[in-house]
Amino acid sequence: MGKMLRGLFGFYLIGLGMSFGSIYAENTPVEPKTQTTEVVPPPAAPSEGLLMTGLGSIGVGDLLKKAGINFYGYSEAGMMYDTTATRNGMGPTYLGYNYIKNTPMFNKTSLNIERTVDPTKKKFDLGFHAEGIFGSDAKFIHSNGLMDKQTGRYQWDLLQAYVDVAFPYVPMKLRVGKWIELAGFEHFSANIYGAFGDPMRALYSYSYQFLYAEPGTQTGALLTYVLNPKWTFDAGITEGWNQSIRDANHRPDFLGRVTYTPTDKTSVIFVMTEGPQFPFGAGRGLPPGDRSHIWTNFDLVVTQKITDKLSLGAGMDYVQTPRIPTLTGGSKQWGGVAGYSSYALNSYFMLNTRAEWYGDGSKGFSTGYPGGTNANYFEITQGVAIKPFPQHNVLSRLLIRPEVRYDFSDHSVFDKGQHNQVTLSADALFTF
Image (cartoon, rainbow, N blue to C red; front, top):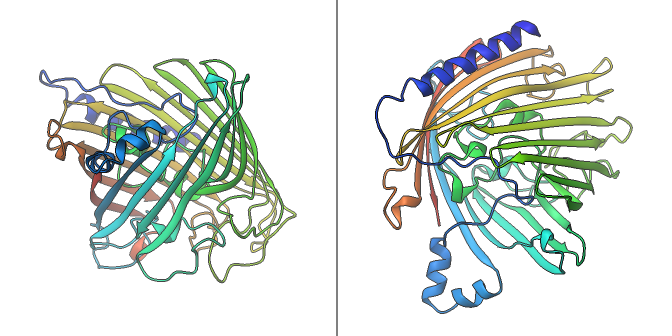
């Protein structure tokens, strides 16, 4: 373990060195967006999107604004090229959503309608959020029983659908429905109005932790209490990882979160889930659910804004279960740790770095590695978030994110029996 963590720290220092080495001239500073103190991700748009502007032009926008309702969305497309095993199409890359090599992918279009509520106002209020997506990503984030019988590369999904109720006299709100999981430094849905320099979606590719040690969505009821500007507490009951219309285990999970923001530059978020999760996928052909063995998942996210240009962060995950029915032996564990840095060169370019170690102590269960042995994974990713037209009224909403990623494993897990993998990726994301 010590060697792994030292290797991770070395990777992270290399990434920071690449960021600092690029500071060589006077540039117009851009304040990178750090993890917010708001209790409901994603945060509300700081400026009106193109969709709301269009609705305003036909006389509907003002009515929606008065009601506090917002329409917005984004589209994303990209491509991943594997330089180590260059054949086209499928092959084990362990990159999750970017699973097809050397082929352009339309990742998704996301359409949102929401009305947010503020529990700190201590008054009764009703809010909601619905998000639908279409694209190649949808097939990987279906919840159990909801739109999970589709086939083909491009699919639909109802990613989020929940109602929020704020209470009078107390700084509390209740959420009921389906939402994106609360854990993790990275989120499936881009914080689209802060995407330039947003640590939660700074890179096109995802971490191992996001892909293999965290749920995608959760469905249930969640109570939020805002103690003061520094402390927020969430606790609730869910159907489990990626469960919704159907529940594989028919037993509730506990979900809790503590958010601590001592200053506007520092954020610490701890999330815990506990309950039976096997199997945690969705779709046909899954084994029967297991109610007997409780999974415990701990997640910790720390972000720190160092200067107006530089933000650092860390994400840690640990999952433990006393047994997995499809495997021999007893207790299994998996998880990892990752370091992040974002540095704003100017209004056009943001350098983003991630360095990660992930340990699969579940004989390949968490990653899907068919070797039946425990494996360690390391990766370092260097990317650039580019806004080609930062001042343009419409084109300023275009974000391009090229990146280079190096992966290494102590087992021959990658395509053609490789221990190493070097991938070049890029995507374009346009908000509206």
